[in-house]
Length: 88
Image (cartoon, rainbow, N blue to C red):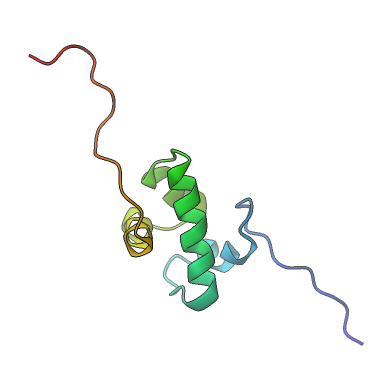
């Protein structure tokens, strides 16, 4: 009988299947793994994380994360931060 192998962890909380996506940014992500990654990205973005923060967390590009959010139908926030004073 073969020993039981625990699932690989990526260091990304709540997303064990993302390890291979994190280690090789050129590898295509498909199927269940892509759906899990899309769900993780969407949840993090809805919590207030920026696309750049999410991209660095999972080791992928800004464009890849942006594409996942667009595919999931997530409403993207506008660019920029708080203004420093009244508008002139």
